[in-house]
Image 1: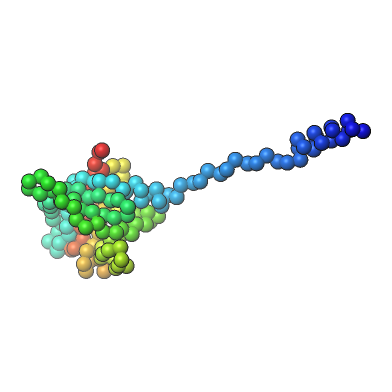
Image 2: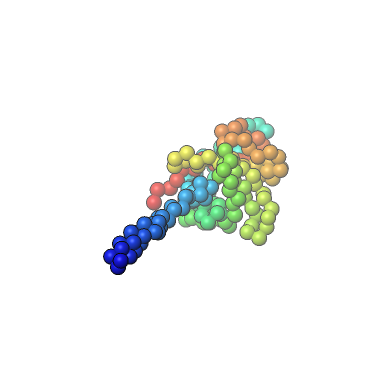
Length: 162
């Protein structure tokens, strides 16, 4: 009898409880990943401005753009070769759109958007098109390769290598 009880305990003990499944791996949020991919320092390759006469390529002292912690910062290089940093502007990014949406707020404390735009990240190149002023009150640009309308800007940026 005791032998029978011991055998039952061993049999039931071995199959009575299912094994605990391993924890599920957390899937990365594609929106967050896309925004993180924008972070870094970008070298300005081309800076264009739309006018009623057509597109002008601008010469600018802005030589780099830094995107960090959801903010856009212009980095200017002086004639003496020194760098100066502008005030960081908060970005509102929606990477689920195609092309992605990128909007600039006046400050962290203000909900006001003063630029509306789109972006495209292709490898190490980031292209951004946005409207400023009256152009920001019109429709959002449809793509980064469109003809620029007056008061629209296009930045073509290349990721700076560390």
